[in-house]
Image (tube, rainbow over all chains, first blue to last red; front, side):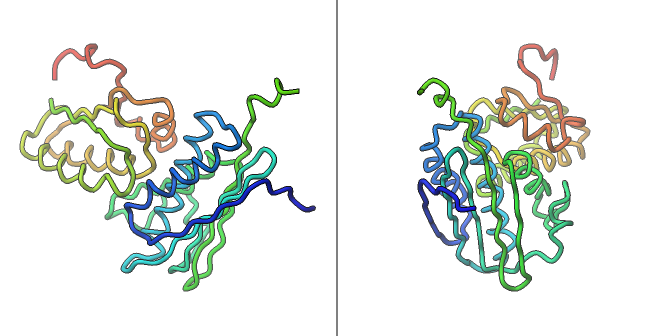
Length: 150
Length: 100
């Protein structure tokens, strides 16, 4: 089944925490083409922030690396990929458990994946230790104008 | 009572500075109640949960409590998800507080 991609964007940046805001604001601006509600935009911003922060903290704990984001717009849906070429996740299932964290000393709450799961419609996590991690998230945008347009 | 007004988006980048400042003041005044005003906070991710739990632990060393005021709906949703509202109260209006 081929997908009807309406638009696509890619950004990449160094894994510096100052880029967390840049990343979520960029994706939110791109997503706004689908005319999302304020709540949908808030959900997307939070989820992107979680995924990017994970890469910054866990993928590249002692050095700077590259974090990539690719987002595509489908008919009524946005798909966002956040990827890194960092350390990778040993046990994905465990990492996705609510409150699980390996960085409790940094006051990390262990809620990152739980928030992504709750705020997006679909979440896929792929990781290979030593090679990196890719998180793919999808969210349906309920276009509020669609019913009235035709 | 010690009141902190947070004026920026809460993420992993911004919490560090707030954490240091808050801990310094809590240890200095040892208040019975620490209040974080979220009126100017439009965005928060899970770093905010860690920040508030961490300050609760510090305040607790001096038998203090933590409360949050003026929390927007999208942010309340994140706190609810984390379960921390069992120990940290969200108060709608500071004026309803009796004493500090």
